[in-house]
Length: 299
Length: 284
Image (tube, rainbow over all chains, first blue to last red; front, top):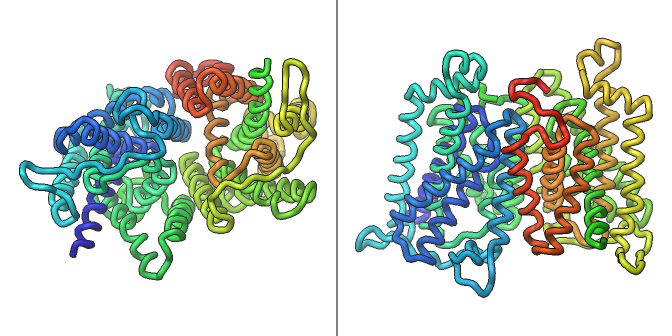
């Protein structure tokens, strides 16, 4: 049962991540390879605030969303004058820049969270205090899954409201024909900025949830491979609507379990999983760009 | 002076990769991230045979892989009029598959090998190790040959015409697939050369291709992606920036400084420093 809670928590985290990416890819048509970077920004914010500054979980979570959203604003500033595959490469560069910062912003002699040692570099941040809710500890899967699911539900509610709002229709209109949308008074740059910032904030929330459960973090969480895997499951599951991200998150959680079921060791499983998602991307590109459960061909 | 020479040596390696990228991008308008995978493959193939045989095998293998990506991955998508985003996704997927196959076959721990060497150089002011000397000689020669080929040969002229206007080029009776194939083969060769020269004697792993690809990407953005030559100059400049950063700041911050410069260029002049400014809506 504990393992089921464990899978449920990761499903909640990846649901948030997949949903945040689908907001950019499906609605705004902005393929992004920086979602893992936003996830890492949120995760590192929560980790540093909880471990170095003694913040409790809820304020750290809120701060993660804000800081990740700010990161989204920075990415938007870099990429606002680019479109299409050029924008993808901008997100790739942003991801690389952030990875370089996370790996290198460290100093062995300085305390974690200081200006000389913000991230602790390749060593990562360990022994992050378990979150609490008032007098109750949320350590362990059996205690952490209700708040994780609640946070994911909150994120899904935000996505659901956005999906039904005039804002989503405006973003889709701009995605489909930017010039025509501009001619009727829409502001493409503003709409894309909003999509990017909201997407980054949700990814940051997922990062904070991850840190609260895992208790450890290192720069590999901001890796390109993670962004590519996420992109593949979002494209597979579908880029518009809520069912698509849920399908994608389920695939993301279940593939390692399937590999374990056929006795593939943990070391090889990671590589096979990555190769599988890579092959999935190629197959999707050739066969079905709108994904299994998607409503629109966003690409 | 040492800093400048160090920077030029590194810049030449990046410039070869930039030339490889532009050879595929400009004719086809496709961003091929799979070039990073081809870069990673080269040293592993070179390890399979000793000396010059290994080098030839690596050059052949990389050009064959590059051609195969065109024929089996991108040509079907071109025929179906897929958007550039689809091509990019297919290319990303291919990158993942190839690198993971490399990891499963060879492991992800760094390996060190000497692929080619022309000896060290030491004068009063400058000292070059064998790797740098090889980059500055063989790398510069290869880069010069590539640029001269593009500028002065008939095939180079046709590739530049194709890059300028592919529809007009096709209406003149030229077979696009033939010239795409030539571009991809040449790109594979330059990419392999960059990989073997840059990773000569300092180590390589299956993920080193993406690190070089990203630095090359910075050169393409900073120089301007609408030109064959601008990214080459930008790559040389990036080599200098990295060398200066390593000398005066720290080697571990050199990558971050390059990307920070890239971020600034993207905000201020997204079409590149050496390319003319263009409206966002203007087609490439």
